[in-house]
Image (cartoon, rainbow, N blue to C red; front, side):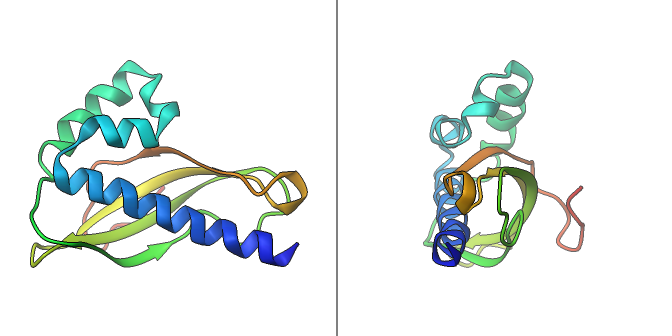
Length: 126
């Protein structure tokens, strides 16, 4: 059971990396596919499309820091993670990621709900 919970944290981080890679490509469609709850809300789609267009960067994307939405939930929990990433030699991009996670008692599923526009490097996520 502990192994499933720890694997879900790794899955969350991997999915956030995929979103950051899509943002670095300027691929709003891929970001919205990775965040289907956002894709169902017109305001979220518009906001995401707008900020993704400003995040296009060349080079390999790397996660500098990731604070998961929740450590080890036993059941379904919705929380906010915080990611700092960069592509190539570009300055870091810091964003908040809304995530729904099921603990090992409820399936260990990970769903990214939305990602925020960039925030300040020292800003906290709500």
